[in-house]
Picture: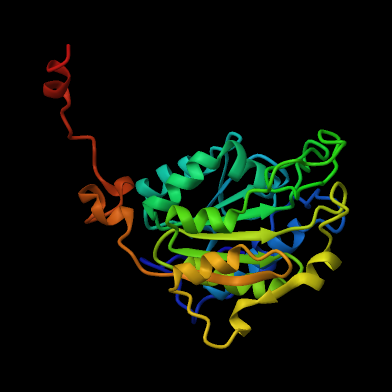
Length: 300
């Protein structure tokens, strides 16, 4: 379905898209029961809730099962190199900061090879949203240990069990300076859609660690496993999302697993310090009349 776009955004009165309108002609190829289906569904519902049009959204994908979503969601899309989704998304956002930029990556993509980019993107507070598909295993390459795999977890790469303590993406985001940090569960699409909506609306870098069962290669962290252990932070009376110390404390819980918004504060955006985009996005600047000869003559 195609609609005329207004000067700034689509009016609610004229908006008539449905989640299915964000489908492409390609059918998802994830394993039946994969948690990616829940994320896929939640994201499309969120776009409709926010009255967003496909041309107003860029999704930057990392490598992994999550990256296959580039074929199944009708928005602008960029499928990057392994671990490099965040710097590509940063460049896109600074070039056209009017776009809603969303990053999709797996736990291996995001906190292993891409861990350094994750830390620095958090501290810069760029206005975009990062959805980490956390299935605690390398699914696309058929079941090796991931940085988030639980201690003792046996895979083909660790037949005697994982020795290291797993990376905690929520704790890492909090310590690195992200201004919106949440955790979701792909088995609860209504709740997940709501925290994604709030993440996209948040002015700053928003991060969601999504617990996403891999039904083929991870028989430990299943839907039933999570349903028995998770509880919702928004059901705790008086929980203060601006309290960083409390958020860190909650993020380290292991017997029970909290989901929802751990932390949310407002801080200056990285973009606010760039005079080049103060008046309009870089893509709208006219560059045909710029003479760089004088600059070049200084070096050659």
